[in-house]
Amino acid sequence: MANRRLVKLTVINDLICPNCAVGQHELFSAITHCKEDLKLPLAFQIEFLPFRLISTAVLPQDYEPKVEKAAFFSQRFGAEKFADLEETISSWAAEKGVPLSFKGVVSQSTRAHRLSRKAFLMGGMRFQLPCLITIFRVHLQEGKDIADIDVLSDVAAEIGFMSKAEATAFLKSDELEEEVNNMCDTARAKGITGVPVVVVDGKWAVSGGQSSEVFVQIFKKLAGVCFVSTMLIF
Image 1 (cartoon, rainbow, N blue to C red):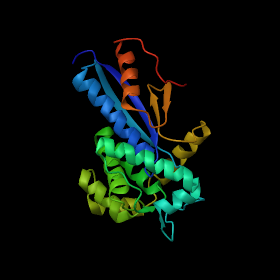
Image 2: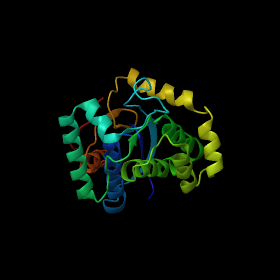
Image 3: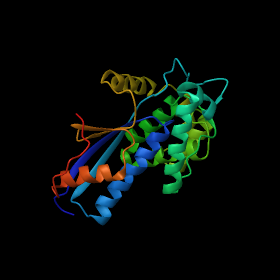
């Protein structure tokens, strides 16, 4: 389609975060609907930036002993709040047919963010998007440990932007660790305390795991289809 408006999306998320997985699914659903069903004159450019909900002081990258997700989040948020979160996520997962669960262990997300950043630097969103989708799948559906080098190197090999051996060597190094740490610090310095946050064209930020309809309304406005009231917060 000629004369498409480019919409630049910057998504700040944490790969241990169920709400981020929900938000990513809803955002992609909105993009697909706008492109395939509504046929809006839009093109999308997406970059994911790292955030750590749990600091390295609370949960070191190689956290030992491993802690089960349910036990960790129950202790961190309180049993009642965690039960509400689990119920909300489970209801959404059942409705969408995405089997998210709280099985498995919690680990620091730095290594997973490094792999995501490496994918972006090697191929932009062509590699980063499937990398993130796969990390969310193995962590939040299959219950695998995303601090495990073997797990992450399998992700890279599955996507195809590095071989398992290349990914293993990268993950054992400190390449991109400083960059990821700085990005996480920058996000907090800008006042971000929770994720996901989707920044549209560098101007507006949509916070929290919003529904696909929220994004559809925003994209309609950007395409000039109609003027709508959105949840845009500078």
